[in-house]
Length: 271
Image (cartoon, rainbow, N blue to C red):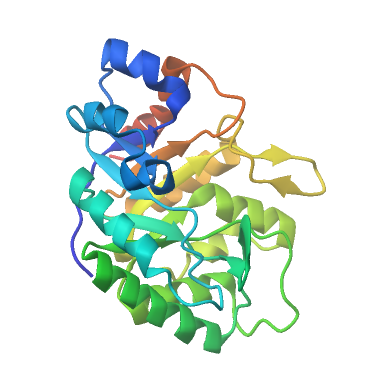
């Protein structure tokens, strides 16, 4: 796997924060963009302004790496063009499916944890990385139930694909916690055998806790349990770039950045 830089602490770039960013140019390490929001020249002026001041990393939501339909090379071509514009040091998407022939569900559904699926997804991930020509990483998604025919643990499935495809891991710590609550495993078990040298980026986010289950909503502060997991995971990585996601019930930019900066405090305490 190719080496990628450590960018520090960032947040997801959301249009609701454009006025504050453009007025103040705050001292933030980097932004992650949702790739689909900027394809084919969309929001070009805003993106140009951001690129003049900050590093940007691309994160996609519609690749649907596990779907049965063929890879969309028109979409990949647009990603490649955007990567050249942004000089994104890597790009990522989700280890999920959301399409069937003739249907796009606009969601991130978990995959059956089977060896044949490992082979299928790994081959497609290799093709994606080779085509876009920058390092590619897959993100673990929240799962609310398991398949009865599963042949391995989620973490074995995740790292097996990364190893076979020779790609990176975009490790969402909150998603691990949400899945552990919903499926009844210890979150620490997820991390025991992960190849942390492949973790290029970490996501942190808030979720909604309904006691009996959790939903990955990205509209609350990061919970203490997730911060505790981050404190255990981050030292095992090669200073993986860390990003706060906040996608609904938006706070001001200043409050969002203050939430993200908690990661710096955790990192400092570990030195």
